[in-house]
Structures are given as structure tokens and as C-alpha cells.
Length: 439
Image 1 (tube, one colour):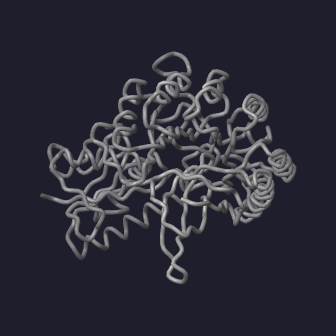
Image 2 (cartoon, helix red, strand yellow; image 1 turned 45 degrees about the vertical axis):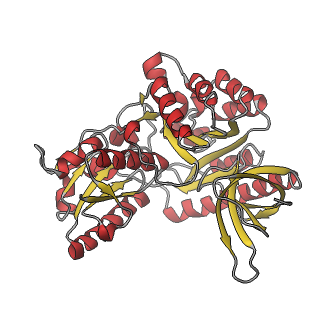
């Protein structure tokens, strides 16, 4: 039996696709391994959304090809990088054995078996083979990809060309997958898509995320349901009502705004009424924890735009803000805009925004210091020096890998994947320190 290893790069959407891909391979008779050195087949599932992601993909491919020289494994590349480079992949990486784009991942085993295909298959799209999915984590948290592609035309983004137009999965298929995940011990379900709040419009003629969430909230065993990647203009009143009504939907939303200045938003082709949408959310759900993403150094951005952005963030709408300097992708329309800004300026502005937001974050946690907070344990390791246990976990307003952690010292071990309650003590960086009583 041949062994296959899949290396997933980039965002959680790629992680989910890699899990589907593992299931497809297993269904074709392959064994699965995490060790590239012992694999017969290696697949690098790539990301190319921004320059750094593209560079990471290329670096990883070169690393796998160096293993190929030693062990003789066959190396394949899938996902966004082949979609971006198209047939240039042959000249850039002549040593790879084959590659597929985002829309033909399911066909990769047939390409490996060389059944009627050349070296590449490149129509855009995605993979949602939930019946084959192999979870890559032992923790009871995972992602549910509710849609593929994107229907927006943000000037800085190449996702539509890499992934195609917006395509929702049906409510029935998602509920079925969520039930299966819950039956297998999943307690936290994290909804993702390139634009999660536009879910359903393409197949139901209306935004249907509220209906999907209501169905998911009824599934026994799902303790937390979390929403990432909300698009501002498709956040509806009915969606906010569901957040208010359902206790197992985390009072947390990730809503990337990218900027607040209308000058910059217009150049980005983003909603100009973003500020009023954020106001609406906070008025209707005053206790909701919001996170967002910001781009600094976008072409044409001025000091006045940055000051406006910082003033908006200092109002305290957001607890977490991911800040990224503008990545000038030549394939994106924004690369053709005038008044391109030096990267060093974008980096300096990023630092200004990050510093301002950290003060907001710290003040918000100070306000709830001493409160009890429930958290899920992700890791427990014993210290050699004093035999106590270092614990890391997350609470309802912390998404995996992006919002920091709950941290504490415990006299006794806490079980990974279980929920406990602790008292908020303070912060260190973006990690929240808690203490815990008798277990």
C-alpha cells in the first residue's frame, strides 16, 4: 500500500481541503502518513493569496523536492500556486511529477495513477468532499467550509481568479457534515468561506447564513459555533438576531474591514458604509467581541487616512485586529493604481495601527479582570523545575491561531479538549492569564 503525505499551507480553508484530499486518497487505497521521509507520494497544497504566501509555497515545494532526491518519492502540487502560475509550473518546477489547480483536487489520485491525464489540470473551484474527510487534529475543534470562491471585485484580491465565483454548499449538506463531526467528538465548529455572510444567495436567492446557523445550533454536542470572514455589507439584522438568540453561537465575529477611510475603501472597491455597519452590529449586540483585518500602505493612502483609521479603532469597536502591509500582486488591479507607497512606509503605518489597537485590547481585558471565563484546553505540559503544568487554551472570543490564548499554571494536569473555568488575571502580549481553583 502506497503512503501519501499532504502538506497544507495558508488559511483554514486550505486546511479543510487538505483533509478532504486525504480522505479522497484513503478512499483510493492509499495509507496516510505525516512523515514526508517515509511517504511514496507527497502533495503540497499551496496558497498564493499574497506575496509572502506564494514565497512560502515555493519554499516548501523546494524542500519537498530535496527529499525527493534522497528517497525517490513522487511530488505533486495542488491549489492556488498552480492556479496562479498555470503552465509556468513546468518551467519553474520541472522536477515535480504533476499539479492540479483549485477546481480539480478530487482528480489528483487519477493524475498520480496517470489515468488519462497529462501533467496538469487547472480549472478553478474548490473541494468539498465531506464524506471522505480525515481530520488532521485530535482536538475537538474544526472548520466547516460553507462556500467556495468569491463574488466581489476587491482591487487588491486575486481570489476570484484563483477560486472562481461564489458557490454555496446546500444547508442540507452542511448540516449532515456538522452532525457527523459532532458524532465524532467535535465540540467547536468554525464556519469559514472567503465571504461567509454572503452564504446562500447564489442558490436560495437571499442571504441564508441565519438559517444555516439556526440549523447548526440545534445539533447536539456542538458547544461553540464560531463565525469567521464576515463581509460587512451582507451582515443582516436576521443574522444578528440569531447571534442574540442562540447560546452556542459564540458572541464573536471576524469581519475584515481592510480600512475605514472612504478614500482608501473606494480604491479597494470595498463598502463605503463600513463604519455604519460596525455601529449597527455593536448597537444590536453591545457585548459581541469583534476582530478585523486592516491593510496599511494601500496605493493612495495618506497620513490623514491612517489617522482616521486609528481614531476609529480607538473607539473600541474591535478587540483583535490583524494588520498587514499592502502586498502588491501584479495580477491584481490595485497594482495598476497610481501613488504606490513604499513598503517601509506601509510597515511603519502597520506598527502605528498595531500599537494603537494593543492599547484598546489591554483596556478591554482590564475591564473584565477578575471575571470567570470558560475555556477549552489545547495543550498541557509538565514543567521540570517545579512539577506544575503549563496550560494553554482558548475562550469563546479567541479563534485558533489568531487571537492569542488563555494561559495558566496548574498544580494538576488538565485534559486537552475539555472545558474548564478560570478567573481572568491579566494579559501578557495577546495571551490572557487566568487562575483556576480546585479541580
